Each structure stands twice: as structure tokens, then as C-alpha cells.
Amino acid sequence: MTSSGCFAEPASYRLSAGLPIPVLKYGAMIEFLQPPGWPRPSGYSNGVAARGKVIYTAGQVGWDSRQRFPSGLPEQVEQALRNIVAVLAEAGAGPEHLARLTWFVTDRQDYINRQRQVGAAYRRVLGRRYPAMSLVQVAGLVEPQALVEIEATAVLPD
Image (cartoon, rainbow, N blue to C red; front, side, top):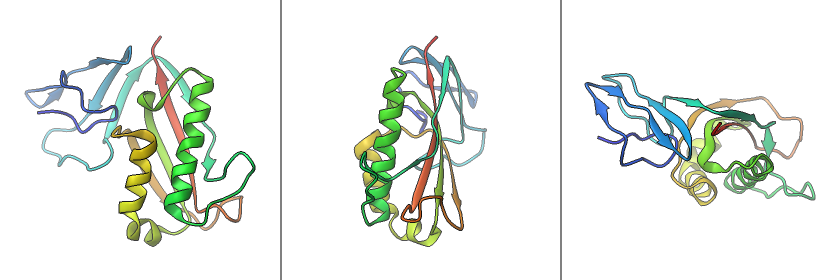
């Protein structure tokens, strides 16, 4: 059985008596946390334990380098994720090092209605890496045109 964890499902990941085995992946020790008997989540992991240098990004909104916003949620998600990848690159990290994402959306129903397009945008930027994630609806964001803001935590190998 493989994990539906954060860094593409490693072939070497196995469950032994329902307990996860840590995997050496991308030079960092990664452990996907899946409590026994819980259903496997779709598109995220319940938890990730990792050892290495921790990188925290500020919340990234979906604007480009000239602070222009695309009009829709999927487009803003894609740009916000590209912005996260750019910040991670400054530390020598990439999407494969992501351990956690926290999403803040201004319209939960829009997110639900456009989940397929949001998922496609996510995979274009991050591939099939599914870190621990939370999504929170907020009344508004500091930038009035922003529909989403995403914070990231990544772990680089020691």
C-alpha cells in the first residue's frame, strides 16, 4: 500500500502493521502520517513529519510581479502557487520540499464549485505532491482583488 502523501507517492513507502515507515526522499526524512483506520484523504495528507531546514513563506496572493491579478479563483491559485515556488527557490527548495499549505479563500462555495479547475491549476505548478493542508474561508484579504492567499512551509535536507 502506498501513501497519498505530500511528495509523490514513493514506491519505497509501505505500511507495516498500519504504521508508517519514514522514507528518505529528496535528502530529507519524510514520514507521512495516516492514523490506522482513517480513510485516505484525497489531494492532501493528514500530517507530515520531516527533518531538515524549515522554510516558511508569507501568505502569497495570486498577483504577478507587477501586482496584477487574474480574474478567477483557479487563475489566482495558480499564480499564488507560482509565487510560493519562486520564494522557495530563493532558499534552494522546490515543490518537492513542501510539508504544509494553508489556504485562505474569500468564497468557500466558489472554491467548491471550481475544485476541478483549482486542482488542475495546483497540479500544473506543484504536480502530484500533497502536503498537509488546511483551507479557511475569510471575510476578506488585505488586497481587495485577492480571492486566495496561501502560506507554505517547506523542509530542506540538513
